[in-house]
Length: 57
Length: 244
Image 1 (cartoon, one colour):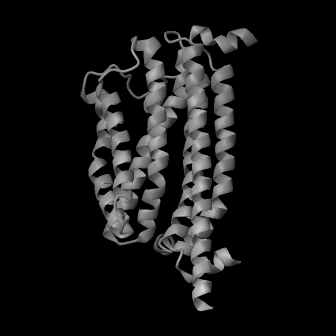
Image 2 (tube, chains in turn orange, yellow):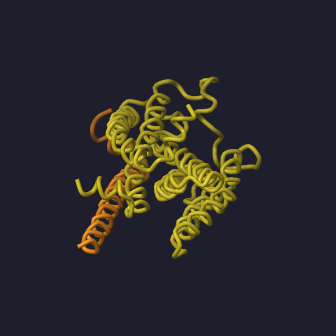
């Protein structure tokens, strides 16, 4: 299959490529959202730790 | 075996093990998905009826499979949390919900884009499509219900109950193409003993299925660490882990 034929996907390019792009986006969003949830949880835990240290002092 | 099962109930153990497993799962997922995409898009032959549009199966089927697997995991974990009062059960259920919801949306969107050239329409109120849409609503309902309570324990219990009730939809989705007249084709991989698909088309699909499962495991590990931190932030071990 030549390069042009590959991108044309036998005339189905406007259906095939959006599917792969959308699912790529789903994978990327999952990673980003998961890392963000850990970062937020770490921030909250740090705040709780700081509050506990303040209370003790 | 039971010792290992009981260890999974310990938040510090889960927090530590999830960090160890995550890079391996993510690395395996990248390798399997990379192979599946290259082989599926570049080397698998076009289908004799569907042409190159059949390649959508390489992202659609793993999304659909994962939507059911993540929901079943969420329901089982919720049931463990509800019956044995194991907090990590609820944590796994909470971590699984957004992942499953996103892949259900992926299955619906890619199925819709495949349906347009094959069926002549983006959407039909077909049993498989409708039951998959209900699955998305169930995911959204479970997540909304969990966050609707000020008391996190009550939210966990309510969400687990809804997840368990909703699990009846999983076999309905799977068998809908058998039980009712459906536009949707029957199972492809389940029949591969009869060689419904040639190896050149099947291997990339199996690689994508494996890759998506490993990816789910990796993201679940990351989210689980966040859930554990959120739920245990007043505990001494979290202070030690964060403070160090």
